[in-house]
Image 1 (cartoon, one colour):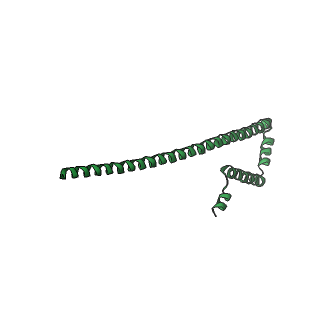
Image 2 (cartoon, rainbow, N blue to C red):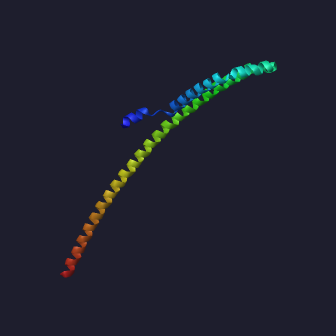
Image 3 (cartoon, rainbow, N blue to C red):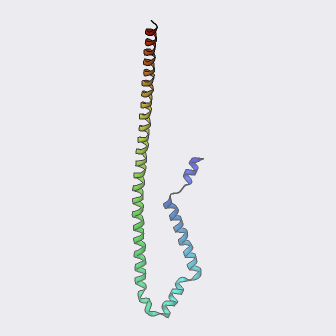
Length: 135
């Protein structure tokens, strides 16, 4: 069951791509029903002096879209590198924690051994002192 859930999870980039596709389809449908370009053509016919700027507007929008695509691709590459480094650091932290736990376990075991040995020696000394004192 858990494997099936893992297969159904999509990456954030894939979800963003689906949202972008659905938004594009929505804008296409809205522009189809409301005839946005007919509206723009009417404005340009009523104001012929503004049509000279249409090529600049299209060029700027195209440049902006290509620039934003490159920008987002670079940010995605940076994110991948940071995520890989984060995973590597987490592994190192886990190894350090395991090493620390092992060292603490060894020290605890050694301390118990030393304490047991010290208790035994104290008992021996106490026994010797009591036997000497009785004589």
